[in-house]
Amino acid sequence: MKIPDFKALDDLLSSYVTTGRLAGIVSAVITQDEIAYQKVCGFQDKALETPMRWNSIFRIYSMTKPVASLAAMMLWEKGAFRLDDPVSDYLPSFKNTIVLAENGTRRPAQNPITIRHLLCHTAGITLPAFADNHLVPLYQEQGIDGMRSQGALADVIDRLGELPVFFEPGSRWSYSMSTDVVGRLVEIWSGLAFDEFLRTEIFLPLGMTETAFYVNKADIDRFTTNYSAENDTLSTVIDAPKQSKFLSPPEYVAGSGGLVSTANDYLLFMQMLINQGELNGERLIKAETLSLMARNHLNGDMDDMGAGDFGGASWKGIGFGLGFNVVDNPAVAGFAGPAGEYGWTGAAGTMFFVNPELKTGALLLTQYMPSEAYPLRSQFRKAVYKGL
Image (tube, rainbow, N blue to C red; front, side, top):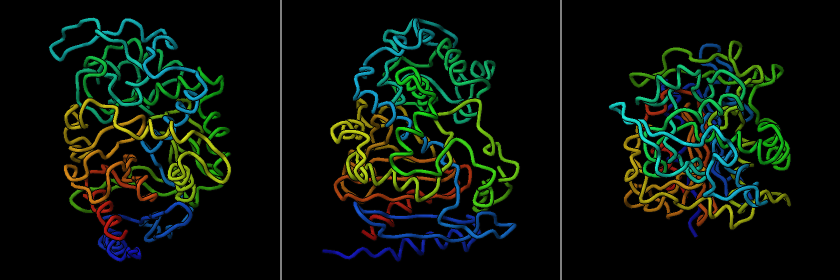
């Protein structure tokens, strides 16, 4: 049996910090029962030279989506809904959906938006901050833009439901606010506020004590600085801890990207996934349900479904499940590991993946935008598999 050797991974991560491309990094590779590799290097804030720590707090942005999707599927297990139920069964504003073509033509959607469409990002919804399509002005007029939306979750999602979609539901893949809608549905199905459901049903059972939609001011000394990256180096500060909007609870609780977390906390979430839904005697979800989430639900791969170069990456050989991207064909995707790997990324350079066959997971936490400024994620994945 090969002994893991993560020297190449270690060298890769160190080089990003020593060359000034990143301020700091926290990373880990885990198995079913241990941390096989752990890395903390650089600074939380480069100018202040505040050392990065294992318990530094990061904006994980879209790595919120798998957590929100898990919450929904926990309720699916309890019979709260069926995957192919129309969203309008629970949110009436989503009834009579209109498809708005780029030329301005409107027509009734042939199919209703379903819960499966939301979880797979095939509903035809968009997210203005990461999109360039003809729906963006309509969203902005309504104060709707993911975690930047104006208003409480229930009000924003009701307004969103009245807006048109830009393709027939189920026909394409497009990164979107779908998981925000999922968060609102969790409230309806559970009777709890979305953030309260996550706290009581996921975070507390797993011991994730430092994952939330805001940072306590007492913990500001562990909160990382988020930077802009351009021309192969860091430039301006995007979000400084002391001025961050993350220092107070948000009015709009965004399932698409609102959480902050630490390495230890997110590794607990990943460990639960590796253990097929259970951790330390706490079962959050059945193994069969997790397997359903972690298989491709698209008609083809993400590239076939119109993902293109989203996030500066290729999506050939990669499908999408119920909250995660799923590697169907590693050879086509250019990945080294066995098929079945699943995970997702965050807008500030974070990423995680779990490989069920290898019973292994890998986590990368750093803070820079846009994430496609560097090829770090693909390099990270290759270095992890090389080490394994």
